[in-house]
Length: 183
Image (cartoon, rainbow, N blue to C red; front, side, top):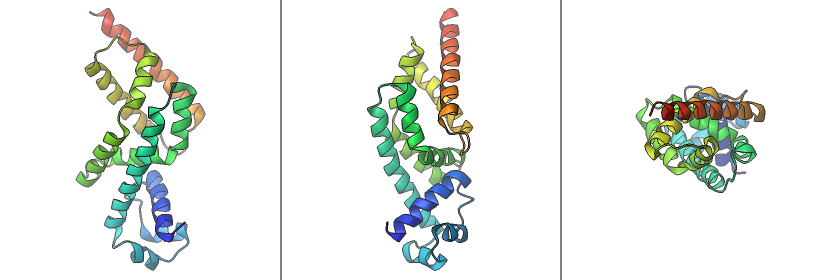
């Protein structure tokens, strides 16, 4: 692996756990095992480096979206894919947390466009809904925000995801039932 790629990979991993405020060149140099001056050989400054992290994330989003698009089932197929892309999900979480920063907001919007809503189709089928597309999109947006705010490095595992999606499915089915019971 080229040194520049190593910096990006380790920076991506560090940022996914510690956020953008936790991204420090000195700490990153220790993790990479290369001198701090090497960082400046490849990147003009931390701001440029963050731009490269965004580009790396966009590439990861393309891979994740392709896998989700070809996914047949929520259990275990989607869960397997999410676990394979744990670092990408955690980085995406950091984008959501820090979206008040306009540059990060733009990266989040681009990431969301790349990711699309492939998993919404699996989820919609799983809850056996009779919702309009607008209702389904709104419910999925709430569920997506909830998902990203709950995950972290420690709980993003198979057991947690199984429990989370089972609970989400039950709650969604109850909500859908209540929506139609009031009509």
